Length: 319
Image (cartoon, rainbow, N blue to C red; front, side, top):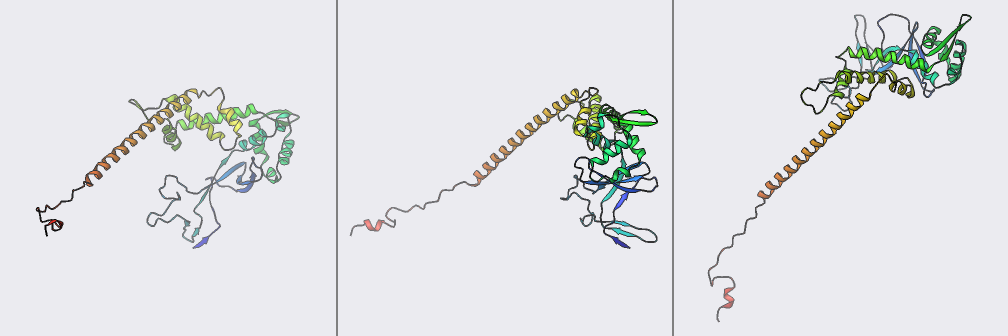
């Protein structure tokens, strides 16, 4: 059995195919790079799962071996012919990556894409000019670019050639569709951990009778979390705010509900704080009483001496 120090374990989709690795720059700083897998016309984002669990009781929040308490430090692979030990226990998971969000961030932050209609060649040249390292631009298939651009750009066709112009309105509409799809899915999956988290945030700490969450409040909260999930990682904060503040979402009722819950929690914390203070004061008083009983001062017993028998009486006798 061989030991591999630098080998990493990557969880791939079940569909077989030939994968290549390309590096895309961070659209925010344009300096750091992140590796992606490319198979046919689909990108896959690589995310490292380190196994951290904030609910674990140990200090480093990492999985441990039950009998020894030692950290899990490797993967062991066995087969009939041979096996190996991979030193790193981290797992790299590949998930589908939508190029739309990546191009959305680039084009939103560069006004030239929204000023006029341009050909795909002009688009490719402009993208290349924005990044010092631009070899990745040609590595992404043209079909992927055109499919993504059709979602976030106005298009016109002349002489069998398509021209593109970035449209913020189409971006917002595209994100609304994604939010609607995600919120509908989450609403139908009551056993998901994120639904449990959402419900936990909405339970009233002080309730009279049933503590059921109103259905409209739950749905509004699911929509808000869906917006955060869709817009939280790749879209500029300004676009996220435009989606959140859109008139189709009326979060006033949810905000009032959350404000009421917050007030109840503060009230409950104050009551608990006062109760703890009373218990602490009572404990101190009881302790002081016990100490007082223990410190009872006893008077020293004085022996009585008969008249004329005292130690100084001899000095006063007649000679």
